[in-house]
Image (cartoon, rainbow, N blue to C red; front, side):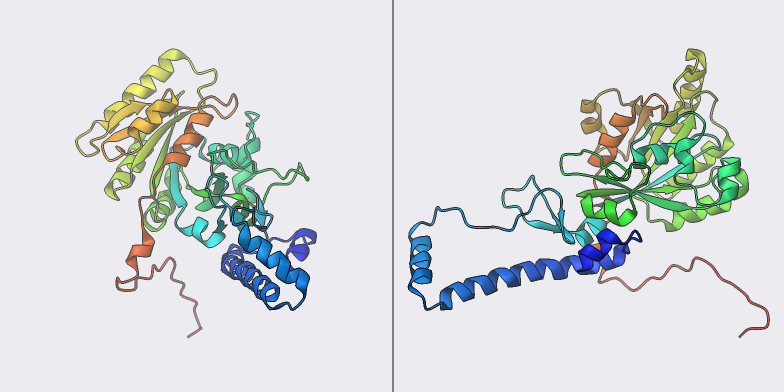
Length: 349
């Protein structure tokens, strides 16, 4: 009844409720299987006994298993790459196979557009269609500038195939976060941060308290990096977050402008306070080469959200990134609570 209600009701379930129900559903499947075995063993009819003996005599006979496929069944899903089709809980996907990536860069570098293109699997039209799908406030849509720190889920299947953000039945409707979480084997949480200098404090707050595993430094290939790009690069390196440089808007970019932008960015990366070696990603083998060397290397991608150039390599890079923060190992540490905001209401308290 819960699943049927969710299918009929357009309002999504919360991710917390899905995570809590995943373990209970898996226990219910095991309990139903045990009850079936007990009922078959305690039956007094000769037909049941004969069927039981026949099953015991032929151990190689295929046993009846629940109809589990690569898609979600109830509130759990199955890893089709495993030999024994074990159900994978959503809570495990959201915790042990969830990587948080902070997306920073100068204003007009295309941060929201890149996130919208990656999460919806639809190319941009060059006039801001992708960014309007993830922006929340009206003034952000009108000005095209992000002023808040938001997070968006990007799901992958076991074979690395990204899950499209558009609903298959309702083409004009975007999938909700709980739908992406239920279909995904691996999740990348993209944190959209502000790039304007006026919102630098918001960006610092998002990077410092966002528990980011990695960071994407976006640079507009048509213009050289600004002082805000240097601030964002120093901010991520000061927190020990590995950086991945992404050059955006490469479609129609003059060669001399691209060359100048790369020279300036490489100069910033080689600075003594950063100490990173730029590594250009041109094929899939380059991703495997630098995946475990991000403490010294800085992968560089050339992308375009309009033509789709470099987006497949960037998706494969995000899928192959190993999880850097292991929060489950911090259970024995003293409790830590992050205070985000303090409000002083006059006349109350």
